[in-house]
Length: 198
Image 1 (tube, rainbow, N blue to C red):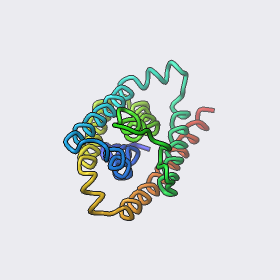
Image 2 (image 1 turned 30 degrees about the vertical axis):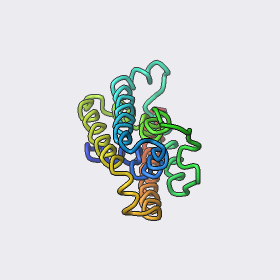
Image 3 (image 1 turned 120 degrees about the vertical axis):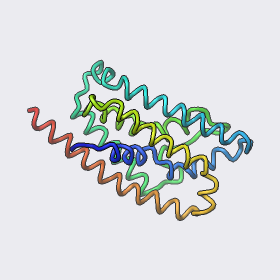
Image 4 (image 1 turned 135 degrees about the horizontal axis):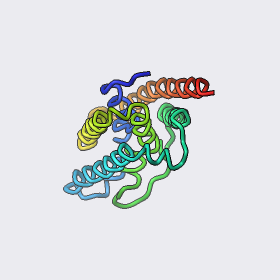
């Protein structure tokens, strides 16, 4: 399955889930001074971006150190993606990533795992492992996806007021359905690759 630049950006946006993260960001930034909120969002997105770029650049090396094959990573990524998708469709009160901490957020839970979570990390490593010769394209895809995420999160409060809680929930469930299909495709591709290697 050849992944285009546009597909990579869309998949990254789905796993970063900026729309689904809007209620979490609004809720966690309520106690933060309104003048600081934009800076906190930019800081958290910058940290998440740095984490993803590290895995784009050194993900193959990390795979080599742990002896993880491409097919194993594809299957693992598909399973994680599928579980996240199910949590997006069947939303729980504690959110997709579980309990959150109190006070001004720093790195956890906004940068990690809300934006640069295990699924996003697995996705970028998988993209590079499938086509290492397209490294700069994957860096560009992560950059575009992060800029879209940043733009959406900077307008999180306005979007939340405009669409309402039910609208956000409906959109997140729709993204969860799309993510489920992508996860199943990843699982099938991973199993097919593994069977071919036998």
